[in-house]
Length: 140
Image (cartoon, rainbow, N blue to C red; front, side):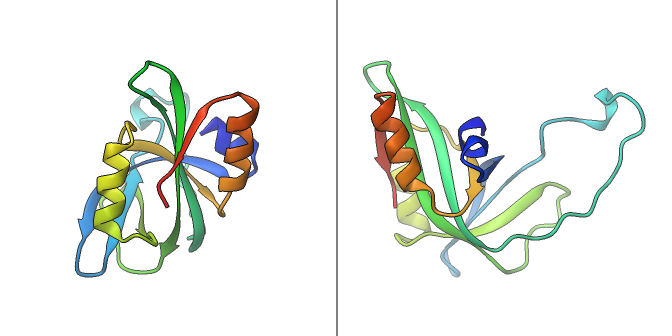
């Protein structure tokens, strides 16, 4: 999340929780960083604008040699009905399709949790990996 934020892309914590094979989309979201019972003071509910457009998913993973690596994918947040479960969630399309995305992501040594940011910023992530130096894997 910090890497995505540092590039000005946001960086919301997310995970995939369902696949719609008919519409070829992956549903992703998360319940957020906190819980109202552990907040200090009165909590506030704020309406947020819905974002549809290009996104990048990023995960910091560990390879088989025990070294950190970056795993990323370009996709798009698309319109459509979502589950009304109280959590943030979105529908994502990937150029390789939902099934191939999930299968390839799972094989990448990455966890299902990742950060999602606005825009396709793979070129910036590639440059970061060169500077660190660090392995990087593009899913799509």
